[in-house]
Structures are given as C-alpha cells and as structure tokens.
Length: 204
Image 1 (cartoon, rainbow, N blue to C red):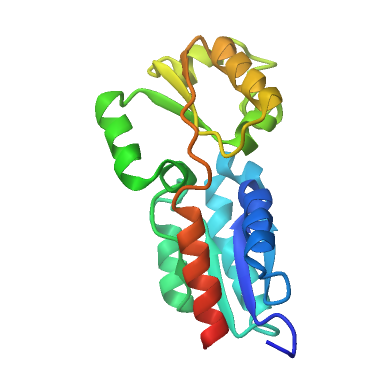
Image 2: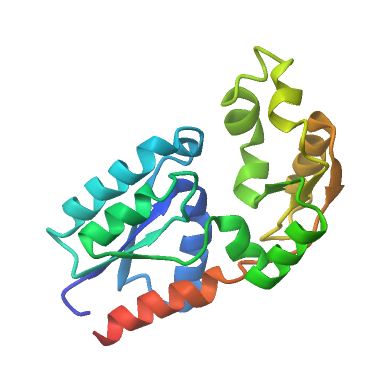
C-alpha cells in the first residue's frame, strides 16, 4: 500500500485501544486506519446503525475497503440491515464479550450462569462514567436493583494483567452487589478476525 492506507476499520470507541495494540504488534500502522464512534452509544443503541452508515459513506471517499468492528450491540438487527445495504462486512458475533472470551467459552459461561454481567478492560476503566453516571445510578441509586437485580455474577474479561483495573472491576462488582470472577482472556477471537480483514485487504 505505497499510496497510503486503503483499509478503514469503523469501530466502537471501546475497542480503540485493543485495535491499536494489535495493529502495532502486527505492523499494520501504514496499511490501515481506524475511526471510532462513542462507546457511550451502547446506552443509546439506536444511534449506532446510522452513525456507522455515515462513517461508511464518508470513508468511501478515501478507502478501498471498509470493515466494521461492532457486534449487533443492541441494535436489534438494524446494524446488519445497514451493512447489507452498504455491502460492508462486520466482525462475527453479537458483542465484544463473545470475541474476547471466545465463542465456545462464552457460550459455556452463559449456559452455566445466564445471570452474568460482563466487563472488559474498557468498561472496568470507565465503569463510573458509562454505568454509574450513564445509567443515572449516581442520581437514582434505587435503579441499581431494577437494572441489575437479575444478575448474579460480574465477570471481568481481562485483556491485560493490570492490578489497577482489577481493583476497579472488583469495586464494580461490590457496587452492583454481584459475585466476582476474572478469567484472563486476552484479545481472544479479536486478533484472528482483525488479521483476516487487514491481511486480506493487503492482498487485494
């Protein structure tokens, strides 16, 4: 790609740090670019599909290939409808929890304990802003049990070994009144999916 980046990844802002880490480790810095939409939109999923569509249409002015790093993320199939209309592929799976845990392990966890609330590194880092403030629990603490009363366990899907993030995740579990578990998943299925997209684009 001597003429500059030709592949655009459109991602949820919650995945930016992980994407950049994989990109740097894989030597893609000169071949791909990423643009992100606000992670807080997970609290307003109706914004995701139209936001992604705007990014796709703007990206076509510069990039040859575009890939989307979103699950369905609560859009009720609307994101997939937009992607089919635009002819753009996204990473497989309903959400990032499945990618990080790996499909088989995630399905096993859900079978064993369907009442599970998941954190990633990003959500552990920004729990107060995205969950406590984003859901209004700081202003209306009585909503905690309304939102989380059916959960039993908080599972922190750790991408890194960061004691500070683990303390935040443990504090989040305590705040929500949930049991705590921490399997270290790393980047899981995100790496092979990104590699397939990026290296497939390089060969195109």
